[in-house]
Length: 336
Image (tube, rainbow, N blue to C red):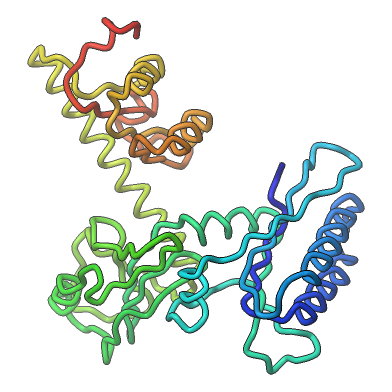
């Protein structure tokens, strides 16, 4: 089943929400492909029906999923109510949501809204809202913590930073909860500054180059900023993976029992099943292993993206897989 549509209702009455969904259904008539048009007509019809049974002011997601591999298919709608924490965050709690936004058709001045994402954007939005890793970005006016679709204002800077020293001083002062805020839907999880997650966003005129640990991108579009953050994270993962490979080769040269292994999916499988694996860097193409490891949650999984092997260094040469174990172990004695 593929998630084809995601709607987040932020406090609309059941009547207003049903009207909004009916408006989206009417807009779906303009979809060119017949099969897709049928699916989204079915989607918004079923969502509107569910909306009629909701209490006024409910904060909830509507998730429409269908098996698109079949010719004649209809989808199912799942209603997921926001928890007390999640509702508080988006309802005056200082977390701003970003996405296609809709007001009640009969009351455009209403403070209640709904957000809607379709097709590939639906799964992206769900993953981001529920599990997105936050970044820390500094605009000419403010410091923010955010993902692609949600953010929280942490601190006003007063005026644009003008020197590298000023930037470094500000970044050094950014601590979890002081002033960095959590945007997590699952608990108070404010980020800490690391090697890749902090950057300037917008137009700055500094007196010199920034250190590698602080990025800079000339945009304040949340989508473009998050794309930039994802690129920085990916490059950091590649660097860390290559450091592990260098350590592995040094250990081999010393004749030590392995603590780090690379390239062998068989060794990775044995280490994982034996609960020896601590952390793994692997390419996004290894989807089954990634899904399994993330589902279990017992291993720190760092996914490296991209097809340009020239930018991956030793990681590409060693099968795009390297992992660290909790202690040194010869996996060949365990069937690898």
